[in-house]
Image (tube, rainbow, N blue to C red; front, side, top):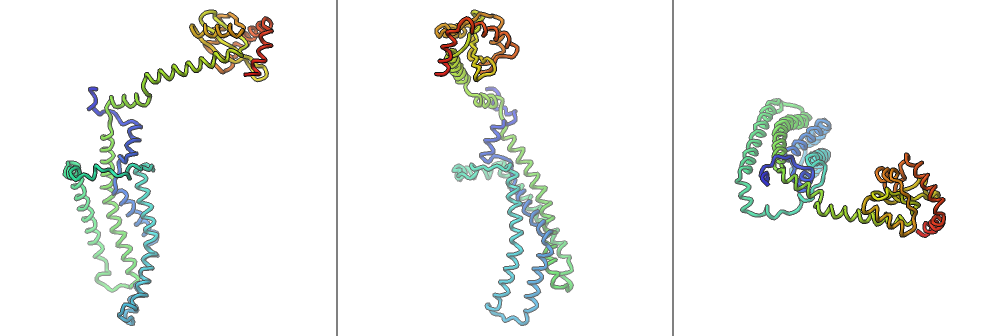
Length: 363
């Protein structure tokens, strides 16, 4: 227990899975914002010409007829409708691209796995005292300083972009009306490029920081790793009891199978192996039971009680016990030796084998 406070071990897969299910994984919301802006910029690059033409068409239609338009609400309605329809046609594909990009970036950060526990209400976060403590903690202050730094960087980047945009001839020389749409699209591209680059660098740095923070928070002590391994494997006493139960069940099945065995080959005292050979069903003799010491004596006792022939052949018994498996055919290198044993018992225990046929039909 001396290393409980010494978290030097990497988190196990189970620890990582549990943390992920609870929403404790590295994520930076700024990356989703960058993805949305990148999708918006890509959409403008692909559809920019069409968007500028639509905007210019509406602008020309409105400004060209200003002299003939009556200044009253009813007259403004048709032009307002056209303007809104154009904006909707422009905004829909842009919105779909942005939603897809933001959703995909969130999925990438969560490793494309659903974390339902994140949606559950955590009442401890509703505690005002705990919230006040979180805000004014060291981590909270670092977060506030980072947000202020981010806002300052983005404002500086946008200001530089606006300075460049204000140099456009549209502000001091006459230009065609269709230049309005191109100007709006080009200005949006300039500002978007600057925001994406600035936010991308900051968001990547923040994500790496969160990644390292989460990893350190999930680090485990050697004792925790050992306890988890022990828990995964189960209590040794329970495992031992289960093994003993399985062994008893197997022995019970083997003793039951001896009733239809052809022969039991013994050591004579250390090993006993029961064989069955049903020519109609099996291509080779099968091992139906095997045991050593005390269980070998039980096999021989059961064989004597049921009248199963017993043959003492120490070399064959040892080989069958060592290399044979219960429920499987005998090893191929023992075919000849076992065939000789079976031929012997078939000749010496004919009455038993006539009775054995009836037993097998009944079983």
